[in-house]
View 1 (cartoon, helix red, strand yellow):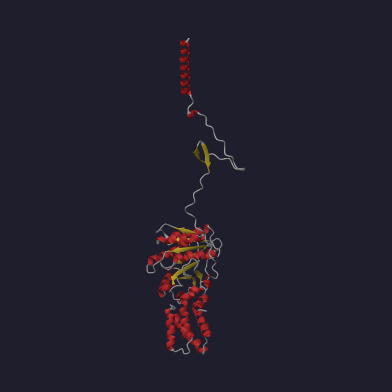
View 2 (cartoon, one colour):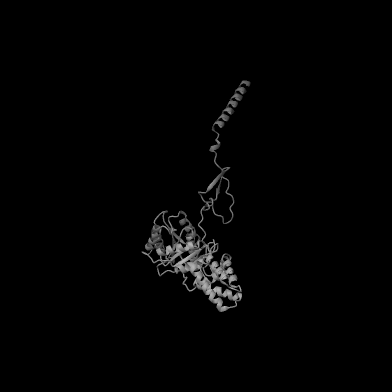
Length: 391
């Protein structure tokens, strides 16, 4: 009996071991277990279902959808378009700047003319002051002769009478009756064309850009032609001026044909229904005949498409009588219709206004009175003379 029980116990142990081995052999592995997904997080009322295709993070078997990244900010922003002030009243606003540079000339003349006794020595001093101020020899003699006559008629002179006398004489010499209108209005479908000429260093390209600001400030649509293809920075400089005020700039390859660029600018003016096309030409050395001839070619090529309404000669007021010689040479090549006198607020002598008009018979139409973008102003003879004489 005991032997029989022992056999049963041994059989039972073997059976238990066999079942345990089978269990270990066939138990499910971890990767075969079904994945139990966590319940979705509660959503706020009105929230949208997450869309597929977004970025996700795997975290403990849960998938979190991230919002798409914000678009990268543009690295290059378009320049902000400026709104220039209108041209009306510009010279009045800039009068203080003009007075600071020119009043010594006017006050010197007033002091001399106010002396009780005006002998030949005083008149010689008055003449010297006028010539030093770049009035020119012929205009100076005319002014002195007229002033001598007026002094004899007046006899005793009060300060106010002396000032009125000198003011009248200076205005007469500056010729306020000259037509200083800028011809920049379109002719039906044809834009007005302004050709800007002058020697390098006078501020020609800057004047072209500032003139575009003046015209746009008055409500005109402007196209700029960068026909100065020989100076590397000229087209870029003009492009900067155009970008600031929203003027279209037509340019060509460096060293290209200036006449071709000028023609294309006029064509663009027609295409865009612009009011005015301003063509900035290369700075011509007035001693080099070939370059001057090329300027004549630019004008002739433009006139195959449209008339040139205005030829502005840009002169640096600080060059004095040397600027006069430049003006005379340019006048032989193109029909100058007006003068833009730059740097009149610096060390310039105001008499250059009188001498350049007298020599050329062409009016000063624009004056540059500072380095700022809006420091180009239509020339006003009365404001100019009053600034010279002071209040």
